[in-house]
Each structure stands twice: as C-alpha cells, then as structure tokens.
Amino acid sequence: MKSLFNVSISSVFICLLLVNFDLTAQEIFANKKNSYKLYLKTRGSKKSDIVKLVIISDLEGDAYQINESVRRIKMLSDLDGIVFAGDLYENEEIRRMPQFPFLRQNVQEMFNNLLPYAKLKCPMFIIAGNHEEQDIYETALIRLHEAGYAHIIDINRAAIDFDGINIVGLGGYHFDQIMPNNGFKISQKDYEDAFNMIKDFQSQNEITLFITHGPPKTESGSLDYVNNIGHVGDFKIAEVLNFNGFKNIYHFHGHLHERGNIRERFNSGISINVSAITSYNRLSKDNMGIIFEINRNGEVVLENL
Image: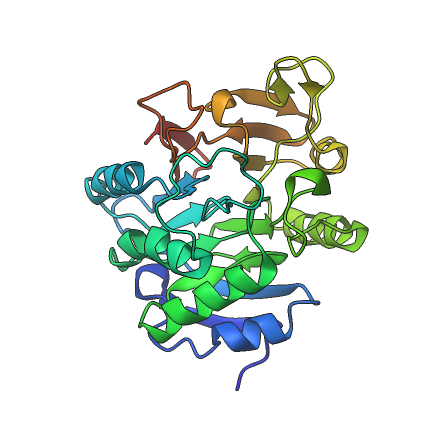
C-alpha cells in the first residue's frame, strides 16, 4: 500500500492515470485530516506540449445541463482532465425551494451527477462546495470507485504536482449558515495548508491552479457581490491571492451562479468564476465552464465551455 504522501507515479501519463493507481477512496478518506500531494505527468503532446483542462462547478442535480456539458466536453480533443469546483449535488437540506427535487437520495444523486463525466474516461479532480455533507460525499466517491471509476480523485485539501502545471484544492466553504451540519467547513489549518502548498510550488516557476468553491473577498469588485447583500467572498482566500510572494496563480471557483465568467485581478494572479452547470440563477446560458490551456512557453488560453 502506498502512502498518501509524496506518491510518485510520474511514469504514468495523465490520460492513462490510475491504471496502476492503488490509492482507494477509503485510504484517502482515512487520512483526510492530513493534506497530501500527488506527482503526476501530463500528456505532453509532441506537437505543442499543450495541457488542456476543463473546470466546472455547481452541478446541483440539473441532469439536462449536466448532459449538455458532457456533450460539449466530448467535442474537445486531447483533454487532460476535468476539475470540479464543488456543489456536486443539490441537497434539499439547505435549498429552501429545490429546483430539481427529482432525487432526494443524495448519495445516489452525486453518483448520478458525476457518472456521465466518469464515462468519458478522463481524469476527474473534485472538491466539495457548501452543499456537500462529508459522509454523503465520501460514500458516493467510494461507490464510484467500486463501480470502476477510480479515475475520480478527491483533491479536497490536496496538491497535485503535474509536469508543467500544479493544482491546489481547498474544498468546502467558510460560512456555515448556508452549509449542512456535517459540511466541509474550512478551518484555519486548511487555509494554512493551502497557503503552504502554493508556497512550495513557487520555486518551480510554473502556473498553479488554486481551486476553491467560493470566491475571494473583494472591496469593490463584482466577483463576490450579491444584490441586496453585498460582498460575500472569503477574505482568507483573498489574503492568499494577495500575498506578495506568490505569482502565476489562476484561481478558479464557482458558487455565485449569477457571476459566471467574472474575473478579478489580485497580486498573485487572477480569480475567475467558472459559472455553473445548473441553469438555476445562471445569467449566461452559453457559458458552462472554463477551458484552460497552457503550453511550455507559459502561454495561457482561456475559453468558455
């Protein structure tokens, strides 16, 4: 059995990820109090060395939109992975008026929501949002692994060191009034761990993707602004993004459906709301996520899914 710490499978290309990957969901969750790091290698096309990821968020039980997003993803060539920024099922416990209350068995709903993407056989990296309950999230992921979809990797409080690009995941949310009782409340240690993971990657002079569910706090921007409420972002995430010692950070998040594709500059880079898969309160009907591409020259291309 391999340790969760400093796992080395660098000889495996990401599109073949987990063929020989022997970390089970149970092993990951058994060590969830600790952060961990995986070392993986990207596809590395001989023609362009392009890394291509899709980043999406807020599935929330909208089966029609899930299938539409899968249709769009199928049209992409040479995709290296799909990153999910939380809210993988709706959870009627915290939604006063559920928009898609067709399935109230949340384990099965999360399973069903991720299954169409899992069938694409492309590596998937997931975090929790403010909807997930810890036991539901963990049980659904275990069942997906048992069903043969071990290429779904939980990156809550985890770092992934790819060949040429890095990912740091900080799942959960900071405001427990819109979370279930057993949700993923971000602790001070979680923020510190994420900060240290990003710090560790800075010496590589590579781009780091920082994935959270909620937006950072802004003073005057629209990234985290909710009408009649004000700025609702996480000031501790903003502190990470404004740290003067960091650079080359691309922060992707969801949560505020109505702020899809809004972008805000911070000292270390840029924060982007990737929009929502669900149509609930999503203003842009065309944008369902972000396609992120980077080559070895450091050139980044961002397109709407």
